[in-house]
Length: 410
Image (tube, rainbow, N blue to C red; front, side, top):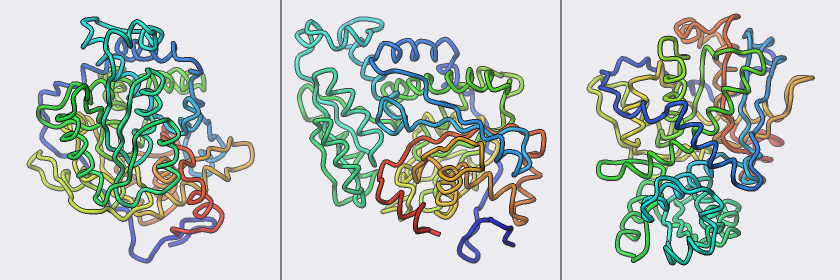
């Protein structure tokens, strides 16, 4: 059923969902995302020139239209002029790695960029794989430290995303295989190259320290959002919609809010691109094991086109998430248009393909009759205050315009 101004989609191309009935674990990772650790990350980022909290958009008009008490969007497009949040993780993990190899506990940004630090450690190379945003954050951070970044990008990566990374002085290239194979290749090449380290935002057995540091770096974003919600009159969101690729970002966010509200945490809904919905697939099977998808993932949500869950993220997410939703591309496309052309009085949020899926999902849930069962089961109603994260701006400006101006991808 279509509502006036509602959502266009292919017939039968619906969002799918499954509630979290996965077996819980001892939850060993959530404690790493304490308020104290988030404050340490923010202290480090606060020392970087140009740091400023990104805005929290209060969409009060849209909240009223959708029948919500409040709707808030953390807009990461202004982050260090990089159009995405990923630099928070990359820069913080580099600082922790640098401290470790020099025998220190912590290093400030000023210490990292000093001549004495470069003389002490010599030339370092940071290898990584990326669809664009994480690699750009690694390249940006490495360049400021006077170090080298080597970035592998999956087949289908667009030219603007490659150019953004090359502009930061990285050795970057688009490969003939998908994201997960790029990760494997970056890991192998880092291991056999002297003076190199893999700076990857996903974890697996035997590779967890750096991904954990990257996730802790996202604590700056979490603590900013928490304080901004308070200033907006929202003491605590009732629901948080978070998009997932390998899962590091949603796991970091829900771990922070779980430690902030240990007895009454917000309900967290995990959103994935239908073409790469490995968390959703894992939640369908109640054995508690992650599911891996292979191949090239055909979706406009390039930042979510990942088929192998991070081991750290999988553990946190299955302990704390309420629901998993597999989202076709029309969900992200609609979210881009709604945020870019809001109701009168609401702020504009320029949100890219991977950043806007939360807006599209909450609109579908509240507007369309076929999602009433989901809406009721999640308890989303006129008393609900919903938090979304727009994790990127128009990182591919031409494709953004095709979707928003021309209605491409539904």
